[in-house]
Structure formats: structure tokens, C-alpha cells
Image 1 (tube, rainbow, N blue to C red):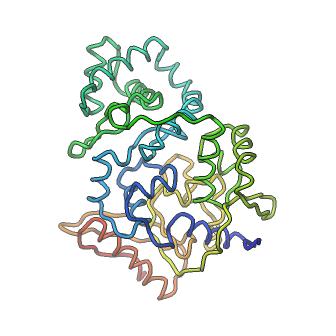
Image 2: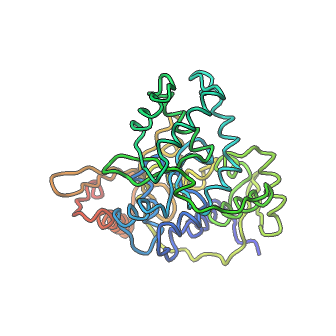
Image 3: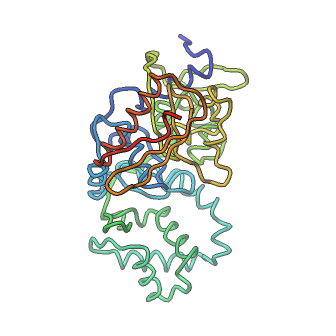
Length: 365
């Protein structure tokens, strides 16, 4: 039965499907596996995104899952970092990496990454990491220099390492202090049976529309990085499992489920949170302030944002003042006293996540 009549209804269903207003999951890897992939170019922010979808979590507990390899961070889908589960990394890369490599071809040409250079780079990286070693990008640069891969620095080094990720040679290793490391994917991830392309398209569309629906075909294309021809094929295969609704000129797809109750909520979401970054069209969250400029990011930079009942109402940032966290909130519309209390509670949850006392500023302006 159709139960979505307007954009506010879309936002409410997305809140529930994205685990933001339902009982959270036990482990961070459960969240990653459920969502399929979680954008993670801002590493600290991405961990906070996972925590808000869990029953209880701290930065330290999620870091332990990452260090143990229960969650991996690699380039997949669009050409940016995502958290993915080890069980999903192989088939997801096989499905989406060719498209990402195609999108990055220009950068490969200007950095002179010929097929021969890429093969030699892959071999040198694999040799350096063999035996369970976890090395930083700078240490990989040394290995590439020894293999006579010229100019293995700056953007050229970044693209060589990214190519090794996309070609399933490497993935994230355990962090060394605050430094990121890389490990051999074959040593970090158990072998898994390959998927036929249609099977992978079906699986990716299931993950997307069950957690981000209602969403359009263009939304799915944006999130996945797939060509529209692949998106159409995915919808064709998944259609028996999906329901669709038409709002204005948009046809939206979702996995049928019980209509979620409207639960009063407030969230301090990080930049690039899947609640908005997972969609090409983000207008469903801008009804209260009349626009979504803060989450468009024309220069690729997006700020942390405040939501009340699934609607964008402000921005926030954190700083450290002596031994406490300072959460500065800037509101873009009037909130009721009850809504401010909910925002304050969200800030206190962030304090608990970091296991540090918190001062909240800006709510009483």
C-alpha cells in the first residue's frame, strides 16, 4: 500500500531505513554490511556516522574493528574512500572498479601511468607487503623507488596506490598511531566465490534501496558510480522485490516494509554522511530551511550538519579546549525548546562517543 505522499514522508522513511531512528546494530561491521558501503574520506567523521547507527559505540571500539580488519577502507564505488565489509570487498570491486578506473583514466594519462608502470607498481607493492606487513604510503613510496618506478610521490603516488586498491591488490591495514597503512588484500580477506554480474547488480541494488530508499534511479547511479545502463538492468532484476512511488516527476524505489513511526529525533551528522551523500537529489531534507546548499559541496567540501526530525536545521563543528570537547552549533532556523534539548542530547552522545567531557555552544543564541 502506498504510504509516501510528500518529501517529508520520504525523509522519515529514509531515517528509519538508514538506522538513524531504529534500534541500532551491535557492531560497526553490521552497519557497514547493512548499508553496503559507507563513504569514509573523512575518517573520523565516518566512524561517528557508524556510531549513530549502533546501540552503543565509542571511537575506540570502532577503531578496534577497523584495526582487526573486520571493516576495510578502500576506494570503491565513486572514486573516493568507503568502509566496506571483507565479505563484500571482492565482488563490489569487481563490479564497480572498472567504471572508476575509466573515470580516473585522465589522471592516469597525465601521471604517465602506462600499463607497464601499473604492472610493475603492483608487483613492487605486493612484494613489499608480502608476509603480513602493513606499510604506510611513504613506505610504499620507498618500495616503488627501489623498483625504479620514477616519481613515486605526490599525486602520482596517490594514483598508483589507488589503482592497487581498485585492482584488489591492497586494502587498508591497521593504523600505526595516526598513520594509515596498507595490507595485501589476499592476506587480509578470506577467499570468496565470485559473483556473476547480474547477481552483483542485484545485491548492490538490494543494499541500496533497502537502506536508502525511497530513491530514484539517478540517486542509485550517483551513489554506486555505475553507468545508467547498469542501473536500469539492476532495477529490472530487482523489480519483483521493490515498490515504487511517483512524487512529482520523480519515480522512487524502495523495499516494502512497515511504515515507520514518526519518532522525534535530532542528529549531529558528519560531513559526507550517507543520509544525504547517498543521493543525487537531496531536496527531501531541505524543506525546513528552504534549500540544501550546505550539503551540495560544489568544491567537494561539506560541513558537519545538524538535523531535527530528518530536516536540515544547522551546522556544527568540534574543537578541543584544554581537556574538553567544544561543540559549536550554528542554527539556520528557529527551534523549539524541546528540539534544542534533542540537539543538546545529540551533542552529549558525541561526547560519549569520544569519551570526553563536552561544552555545547550556540544553542541559546
